[in-house]
View (cartoon, chains in turn brown, green):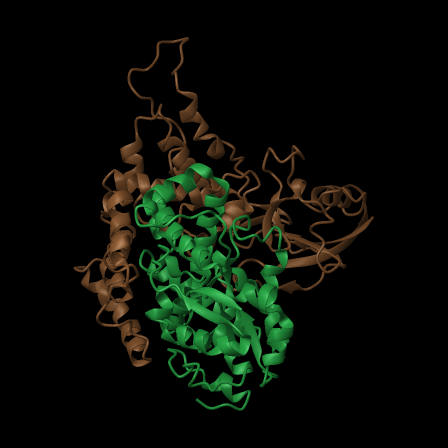
Length: 336
Length: 294
């Protein structure tokens, strides 16, 4: 079968083949990412071939200047993560027949990451975030004697298998929408690993960890877009681990943050009226005494009022609200 | 066609224009809206992350109410759709979770059997009402308008609970609809991205940058307006747009229409009936293109 591959090339010396097309600008927020020159190749491969097969065929038989990073070819080393048709995937796990769009497959490095050359992106920011969550166990006392090991119940480790499956390929961070606008955000991979160590019964450091992860750049900076869940090639579902960390942090008493205030105000409103009271949700989430932040939201509130979009000043309960209160009393936990 | 109508809190709160326009397009589409007036808020994912049992019970109650009406549950909000789809998926596939819900809502005379179907109006247009019926209701073509779709995360992800693996065409319904109304769909990356609203109270600058970037991208591709099936996206894209412009340090000024407002225009309703005069970003310039005033 014949496949057409459009490769986003970036060569720091600025030397491109004659065949390279003009660069295209990325949309915001990446319009400042270094321009890639797109070069088109045609390869003959069997219909079960993957994107990486095509890239290796190009490098071996057509253009030895093409730089591509890969190792295992079996979706276990995580080296060949790249953008394929605008989303993050492992090139070795992506079949060409599935990823042919309008007759071609476009591959490039993700614009949210620094690029070294062609399809090789600099994983520096990724590892920096990973290191920042302390991805190791702080031993609990008593430490087993030499030649013995900690004994852990199977069930406790079953809970962590999903997170342990991470191969550090970076697909989740490459497509993370929060990271695209906020470089400080620890990101899905690091936070999924943060949960993996926090929830490990052999770790003695959970409280300090949760305090750390609750700071700006931590769990509350996730925008809940599910891109990481969609793009992870190993089913780690980082967003779900971030949400578990949020719950652990709140349960451990780290509640002085907008995220917890937001959840509390939300629950209180639904408990009392069955629905959301938007008028008080935002001020309560920000913190009623955080005057500077309150003032920042004032112009938006006035604009909404002027457009006739202010929620009702008197927030009435919906019919049947007693039923909802009963549900809260039964399973509301700390929202009772 | 009779549906159990779940309007969601925002359409009754900060986006009354959504509720009004959804009601207004029901008749031309032949929809009989039986509103679930006693169904609680879905919790918008905020309650489920802190207390999954609570979110299961609240949404299980809503699903039981729809089931007892023997009609599909129709949402007009991507977020409501996402949360209800998520709970429904798990209750249908996890008997223990379903039992737990029924223990909680059972005292109040409710029981969920796991048979409800939850569908956004956008999906119903193509899958239940049918495009022939939509086409027949068109009285005003939207020729000349360039419209950028903006889906909202929860109607697209995670694909499994939203049935997108069985029906991948759901990912392109907005583009199809825009073309059906004789307008031109704008192709841009932002269409399937996050509006930033869930982060607005946690990290305002990042949230506004997110919203602004997508509108700017659509604008640079020539969009006269964005259309969204999600009122929470609307709150950020329209309500916060002037602040987003300030964060990005550039003028934006692109109006954001709710899905029923766009349909209503095509069905010959007036901008006032659709409350297009109640937006933060004025809709007048886009309406002029189809020779309407507001």
